[in-house]
Image (cartoon, rainbow, N blue to C red):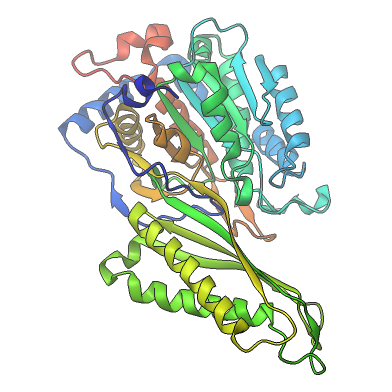
Length: 462
């Protein structure tokens, strides 16, 4: 992305571009209430006027009227397995669905589904995205079920079945409502790959670096999960590592004394946890995290393993803290290797620390138009949202100087990243209405007759 694009708004604060990360869950490390001031109240009054526009008021009723259709498509999406790196079948289904709803959709080389409304000639102003992939996939379609009380259960029904269902619902509404079709033409709809785990935001990275229309985009709205109580406007940076030890292995009795990879790995984990706790000051401890999420090694109780490995996730709002923790990991690996090899016989261990991926940090300023718009919508809808820092697809556009936020799509959910994940669609309509009002506030000129309802003293703009 060229320098002009990175600096064009003057409203962006970047963290070090060196510090990247992956994400498996939304992790809020710093939260604060969304500020309300005179300017925000003025914007809120403008949103109230927009909400009275005939087409928008009709759209609000549409969300309730078409609830069964939205729920049905939500379940269809989730029944198509899409673990990270294997999103193709779900992507093909979504591309075909968007085409049937009047959008020109294609899959880019990364596997993302990218759609414009019909033959929209103007450049898109905003990207609305939802990630395709899930941490776990259903073993069979029947694993995604709906109970008599309306609750959805199964892997990915909340994260991010809810986001993808919202994307499809908005595509249908905007496409079939004539008064909203100009608003549709201002959008780029994206169902992206590679958000979870070791996907390392590959889909969003590709979109931002290889899609020509992105140069003209004013901001990104990432739909992720159901929660309406937070607005992610700061990108949580993180890094992910795989640490492995390899050796000759042998019999637990006959070859006693041969260096053991599992012992070295245990030493590394213990040493890193101790040194991390010692080196990170108490006043910075709540601004970072570390987690060994995978430990593997050995095949039988009476064999010395030939291999052991661990995966570590480091996260922080402060890039300097990430650098410190990365250095501590390398030091712990060296000490563990030295200790296990010190009195070894019959061979030696080797160690490798591999960087698995990363996400960049960054944030939008409090007076960014996109942030002001969502705060104004929330004030109008009496949603008590808070600003937070998390690791989402928004990390990439934020790191490139774009305004970007990640928000939920309504309903409630839990058990994310487990096979017991669940979602309840009650009050989903509020989340969808919130997204539509946000789009209207950002694109009020695209609503034609809606201009008459806007307070010209302080227009809501992009």
